[in-house]
Length: 212
Image 1 (cartoon, rainbow, N blue to C red):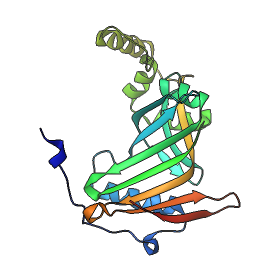
Image 2: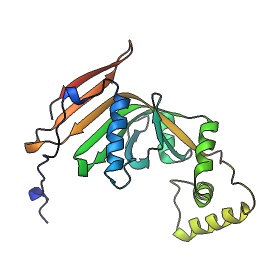
Image 3: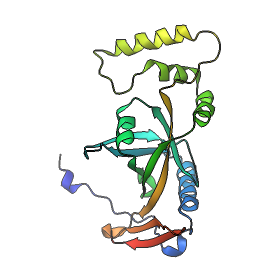
């Protein structure tokens, strides 16, 4: 296997300043809609990078479940390793990679828990077994075999056999309030188009083209 010889020359699209909306959320919405319409698998999947207070990094993939001018929202177990990281250090980075479109978006900002009411609204929209799964999994904890998890799931399914599944205290959403967005469009010969929006203290966003 020779990875050095693996390469693709991106040439399907270009990106110029005149193509960009002044508001990065509007631009993000446009690119997300294109990714959805292109039927990319899990277009809302994003890599979430966190770090502990001492700087030890971690990375995993989560699903974007909503966004507006306040930020980008995802849901998780509040006792997970990612949640522990964000408690120590709320600074995070998000990355969307849409290779069929030869595009990437990178977002940096700070993560904060959303309200219990917002978490409950989303939790009630989930399939019942997914709701039960939130009770069954003590996310990031070590277990000896998968059967431990399956047994716990069966226990929770029996517990909540009647009525609605309540929102666990240990489960809910985070909102990442962006400080920067970067929109990356692949171009031939690795001379890619990159534009960064940076939030300004006086309001608004500054847009810069970056070298690839």
